[in-house]
Structures are given as structure tokens and as C-alpha cells.
Length: 268
Image (cartoon, rainbow, N blue to C red; front, side, top):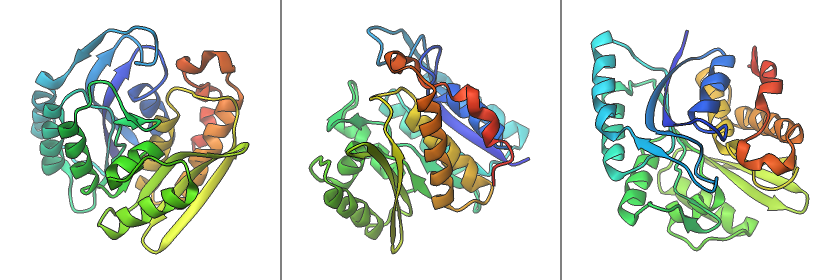
């Protein structure tokens, strides 16, 4: 079986990060190996939460993996708690990214035009540097603007310009998430000489974990040999259906992806 290393946090409630990546990537037929960045009682959008950083343990964990002689077909990175973790992730990539290993980076750092609490400019610079090592990045539109060093905008023309600028500047492929227009929500796929929109209908507002679901399906899809565009189409349709099955008053709890997880098995 192909193997994927997933570097992200584990939240007990909120159905995001490793809690969605592990079942989704596994359902798509990829052996999945988690390296936690933090363990949280629940995801951070709740009124309160408790968190334990795994910074001091991460390197020793993957040093044990080196002893096992393992290799990975893909690496997916997400939420980090501090700048030191980004240094550790760089070391992990140096050790485990082979010539054919895919690197997918979800540059978690901002939303609605604002950086997340605790994210410093130095951390964000390190995340941007990581983006330039990746084969695919999956920012939301706020993160896309930040990576491009441009003003936050919800205008489609600006978003296209930002994505195309980053491709021109050396980022290989981008899936920009969360552009909305009317009753539609779009993911935008940027590749060299190609910009494509993938739409779905909106159902309610914010839901925890949808970005993690998308990056997980995209990661598993391209690891299996699917095109980036087809992987995004699969992810978009899956998220739309999962959201439609989720009550709007439980948005912090995540979406009911478990009800349709079987639809990802055998996907190609």
C-alpha cells in the first residue's frame, strides 16, 4: 500500500485535522501515519479549549520512524503551534521526502483577512517558505492573499491574480478555498497555464474541518494518481453532501462526513 505521513493536530471534538484526515485518507486506500503537532480537548473555535503542544516530542518520534526504514509516497502538513515545529517539519521533509514523494501543505494561519491568534509574522514567513517546497498548497482566500503579500480581497479577479502570481513566482499548484458568490462556494485550482473553478451550493455558514477534508481528499487522490483537478472535484462534491447532512446549529462540531465515507472507497 502507498503510505502518507500526516503532520497535524488531534482534536477530541470538532472533527478536524487528524480526526478527519486519518479516516478519509485510509478510506481512499492509502496507509496513513500521523505525526501530531498538538493534542487538543476540542478545536479552537469553541469558547474554550485545552491544548498540549507536541513540539518537544515530534523529532524523537520521527527519529524512531527512521529506525524502521520507512518511506512515504506523500506528506500532508497542517496546523502548527510554534515556529520550532516548522523547523522540525523542514527536517522531517529533508529526511522523508524522496524524489517521487508528494508534499501537500495546508498553510493554516489566517481567515477572514486576519491571522489566527498566536501566529507571528516570523511563523507565517516560515509557512510561506514551506509553501514553496510543496507540490500542492491548499490555502483559503485569506491565506492566499497573505502568501502573495497582497491585500485581502473577496473579489474573484483579485483572487485569480494572486494565485496566478504565486504560480509565476514558483509555487507549483494551488487549491484556493472559500470564495463565495451568491449561493455558490468555489474552490479554485491554479496550475501552470491553467486556472479552473469548481463550484458547489452553500448550505449554512461556517463548518469546522471542511478545509481539512479537502486537503485530505486532494492528498489521497493525487497520491493514487488522480489529477489535481479531479481530486478537487471529488473533494468539493463530498464536502457539499456532508455539509447538507449536517445541522447548521452544530457548525463547531464539524460535518457528518462519516455518513458518506463509503463513497470515497474505490475512488479513482
